[in-house]
Image (cartoon, rainbow, N blue to C red; front, side, top):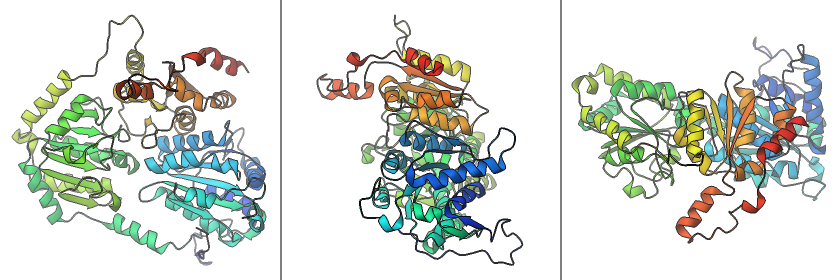
Length: 551
């Protein structure tokens, strides 16, 4: 979509006017100033001809505002643009803030398609700024031109092509607003080189109108659970003896983990999570059942089968969880669903009660109503048998492996690391068997410690995501648990780790191939390991890493 909407400037008599309002600036300088205004702390990207004005503006901004050796807007250069996109994702996932990547036109921009789609699939807030050929050359098949607004349209929450330089500032501010609000997601801003070089006047506050989008946001933000809705919920819950919370990534994105835990603990309701919801509940607690679904724990899946009241929170009944929707939680007599996205309600499985609104506020409201109404299942012992059943399930179907095996088991490696991290480290992964082992055997006491490519399942995600997380959580240990096939996808980012002297720890579980693909080939294709056996391509990863460190 072209950014042809008129910006709404700040009134000149506003006492909160930006200190730089009215100052002449180039488009490139405005890009950088907006990044600073939006609180961006680090930028990831790879330069190129069509984005050089912005890169020069970043250099000049850092030079002008440098404090000692500290730059206000450090620019981290990866091995390639895909790495930049995943680094921005790692930063966003670990911090909850908008991640930013800046790349050039053509191949630079197309290299970010995968991380952008990955962010969209997992609802991660990103702003990707792409250089573009000059406005007059668009459509002429110029050098390093690609129709990014067309290519990205299906992969993003929104895409802007800025052909009117006067709309640049408003477009950029609106891009951040769109990325972080509602159901978060990636926004791409495609900026022709001549727009970057245009001399403009900085406004300091202008945004695009976006009346429809903001109206929908207000409707969600203003939504409140009234007494009638709360009563319906608790009338049904009062009849239940085996309630279960099914928490998804929306709990993490909506910063609702604290409210979820208070609600679950207050009424003694066990919690299962999706792959993206890991960290919503403290996995070390008795009533935490870890991850459900195809690769989840057996006890989580049995509990879901056995529950009679399911509370879906920020989750979407995806196919890795509810492969056959009619059979998912088939014993539940009542299904409740809390979310911020109306598209998810009744999309896969019909529910009996739902609420669209801020998840944290909704959970707090339900907890307060229940307490006021005297709903006390713990005091009455209503769930005593259910809790005993949960404990029995976790004991009977506990995760385990061949502990007396002659060879070191990957699960044993993760268990040992977990003893040291105690659920307080940032864990990034690639995609494959190692990803599932990490999800199953690591503990997570807080949200935003688990970084993985969920819906897209993008191999090569782990290492660059860990790099991004290292800038977001300097206070925590950051570990990339990777597979030999997955880490190969972005092996060049080892150089980025050493270039910036990052304390990222890398564990490669080397099974000489695409383990999960091979697993499926063994189960469904009579063991014909077509293209998944990498035994002929053995690599000494330790030697490789050490040689890159010395370089």
